[in-house]
Length: 445
Image (cartoon, one colour):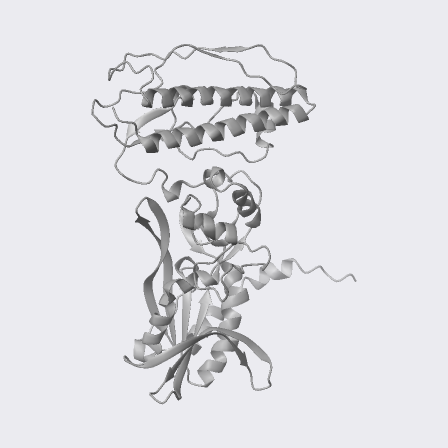
């Protein structure tokens, strides 16, 4: 029987996580005075130690230590586990743990062990006491393996799977879609290098990420919402400069020579700033003379809640925290589409779009699909009649080798005229005047 290296590595990493959790709970128990909380913390620490013992048994079985054959009649020996709390914690008697059910299901009788996907019950310690559970809910976030499968007695079971990634993207219980361009679970040397140096892989104006801050950037490119990534950083749209190729096809005739510039300042007739054009495409002839140009505006979703806190927590230990459960934390981040429209899209369309339209120049809008889906219905026209082209993108999950990553993909193009589009997006649906009047206080006589 050959040893499955991936399986052993998984068991080893899970054992380290369980040991860390055990030590955390024991340390917390040493720092609290409330006897009920201390008791709860010590119980959880003891349970984590039992998981460590189970994982060690699994490693021994895979290595062939004490392996009795391919039948399922083998029973694990009775475990005798002594958990020693810190010195300043009240000593507890050694715990005798008896486990009658077999730790491992029947393994197929083959020369080589197949790829197995461990399934671990999410509930580590069942609580029947309401007050104890409330105490646990107040504890700092602890890493748990994300799964909806319940297994009896929290034992580890092995199930044969096809060749695929161990953790599907839609099972994550944290908001981090991409961190410095890579998924949270990507532990490749390249991903680790980009995280350690705060690099941006998507053609930022400088090598480093500049999102939110220069010295301490918020390196989140996209956040997970309803199991799907939503782009929240405008630079994320720069991948492979796909947006410039798409925009050039709208601006210019086929075969036209063109180049691109970023962050081009735009002013109105009074010299007042109308902002910067995100990307400007300039067409020129063989003599290098400018013959036409168009503007590309990029619109990512805003985010609400506290995104920096889970990002900073993940960056403390990117390997152990890749599968953290952040769902119970306050101010869980989510996309803020309404603010993105009101604070960014509408002003840019009004000011930048108004100036470009008066010059008879076209505008291309690169926009996240989830954000575009929140916009009001717009009247579409043929490409040759359009002033604005809405290039709609999303992030598609692809697998390269044993790694998953998101790739920018154009899903649709919508062509519109400027004035009807501006009217549709800025239209306000007024409420009842009667409801408004009810909140006006009556004048005193």
